[in-house]
Length: 484
Image: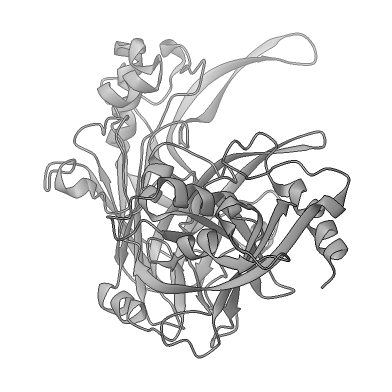
């Protein structure tokens, strides 16, 4: 490979290196005179293994509900979720004298019915699988400002058996109570409908007329009236709903006046719905339960490594940091030099995916985005709402063309680990590869990464690697440069 070709490649690689990188020798500017630059390449082996993810920070706008079995690995995953509801800005009920839904005394407003709708935009599995859930009202609010992980179980502290509201629901994700033509309409959004005792809705209406301040904002609503609900999968297997919106609805009749075409006014009675959404604006967490025995079996498989979500398996990679930085070589003058004083312009790792042994609509999805970062940061990264900075943390997206994930340049990560790594700790040179979802904000031609969270969807893949790999080694390709 010619020096001028490598120099051209090196110049191209600089476009992906941060301009304000202050790490020693990373991202150094090149002069136009490439003849003054000495460019070298090398490759090093890296080792990988699977590790159990354990509980992960549960921060997602999507709630997951159901139980499924991974057809490739045999692992069962059960998901339950908890949500709070909030009062929309400017929320009001009609004037009390216009309420037609009244108690036997003829003066106390009541609800005609009450329900919770769990709307989903996508799902995994069989939409006709019969499932059963139990909805529990929390006995007290779950305070914000805490870090909730995927093993958080509200039942241990926030549900009092026998004294809190409970409603059961048997359902299929395809609601056969809705005719097919309606389900095929573009504006139809499928949901799981959980009926509550209408007394619960009546309590909400009566509180409004007694203490309207309760509906002032989400805090007062949650702390004085509706602390939230926990939805637990208690039966069935075969589907997992990805809940994008939960909504508490109270239905009632009231009188309203409208103006006719001739200008006269007429009273009419209509049925209205008061809705209290549960979205990312209020607390929402997902509780994940995985088949520990199967996960451990996969972790012990050293012929490959696994990436499995939700809260399943990560891949750990050991980087030969000292070897990369300190390796010696013979110069053109016959003297021995070390790369320690050279610039690492590119450090590229390609992770090859091993095709699944299962195909068809019930195969788990392929993780689309992976995050690599130091193992020591695998919790604090998410707890501190960090995003990939392409200095010590990097994203790679799945390429269906090459069936790979490519981390194009983790040179600054290697240099960071070399300079700050505490070699008295076993994990100082280890990184972890985690399945994530990344959110972006687009403004004109500018695309900005705004959040990185754990992937909580049903996805899995095997990667080339492991101590007994059947598919070859993993290598990291390095391009060094130094001025002559």
